Image 1 (tube, rainbow, N blue to C red):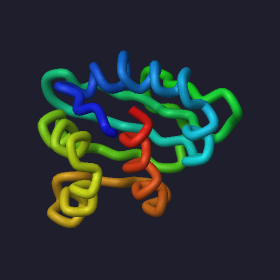
Image 2 (image 1 turned 60 degrees about the horizontal axis):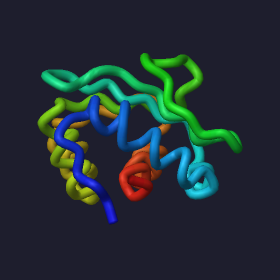
Image 3 (image 1 turned 90 degrees about the vertical axis):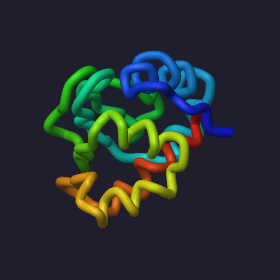
Image 4 (image 1 turned 30 degrees about the vertical axis):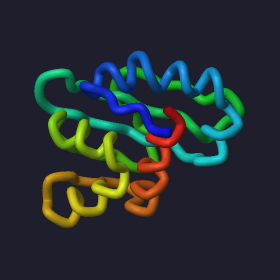
Length: 114
């Protein structure tokens, strides 16, 4: 069951690191290196490494990211509460994806880890 974060910083600094430590095999099954640029209050920039046997999160956007997702903190919280909303945010222009857009669907799976 997905835990709903109240902010992107809570998700990336508290909830997701705990989930990666508890479920590394599930995280690696998602695969890829995903970067997130979250604007607004409680936002920030993070890169989530799921391409190795030791998944981790780094502050900032790293060049090896396969895709970078840019979204507001408000929309990120909505997306966290319902991962299926990601496609709606993308097609409405409220979420931008650069790099490999097929990784966006994998990025949605990150929420299921928490």
